[in-house]
Image (tube, rainbow, N blue to C red):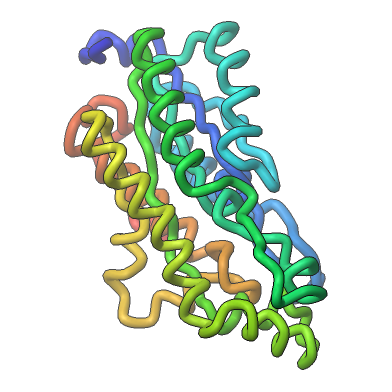
Length: 250
C-alpha cells in the first residue's frame, strides 16, 4: 500500500501499538507514582497530524501481548499505518527473582530470538494486509538509575542484582541489543524505521530527559520523540503534517 496526497482527505488512520512509553506513562516525583502525561508524544503528534491516531499501547505490554490485540484491531479498524514501539518490556527481567537467586539462570520476558522472529512475523502480517508498518528504536536508559529503581534502593538487593549482572553496564547493553534488533529487522524487511534512540543520543546528557526510574522518557523526552516522528513524516509525507512544521512544542 502506498499513501498519496489524496489520502489526507480521508484522514489517514494511524494506529500506535506499544508499551507504557507510547501510553504516555511517566513517573511523577511529586506524587511518587506513575501517571499519564497530558503532553505525551502521541498527543503532541496528534496536534500536528493531519489524520486520526488510535493509541492501543498498554502499560507492561510485550511484543507478544501487544500483537495479539493489534491483529484484532487491524482487522476491525483497518488503519493505513501502524507504528510499533516494543522492546523495553521484552528485554526486561523479573528482578525480584534475580535478587532472590542471583546464582540462577534468568530469562527475559521475551527471548531475544523470539522477539526478532515475532517482530518479523508482525511486519509480514501488516504488509500482507496492505498496511504501512513503521518501527521505532528504543530510547536509551540510564543503567545506574534503573539499577537503583529495580533494587528499590535496597543495598542487599542491589548487591545481588549486580552479582548476577556482573556489571551495571550490562543493563544498558542488553536493552541496546533489542533496539539494534529492531533497526536490523527494519533494514532486512525494508520497513520504515524512526531512530528514537539516535534522537536522544544526540544530547551529551540524555539522562536528563528520563524519569527517576531511568527508563521512561520525561516530559521533555516525549517532546524529543514527537519532534523526531514529525520530522520523519515531513521527510516523506509532508501533507500529513498540519502547517508542514515540526514545532518545538515550547
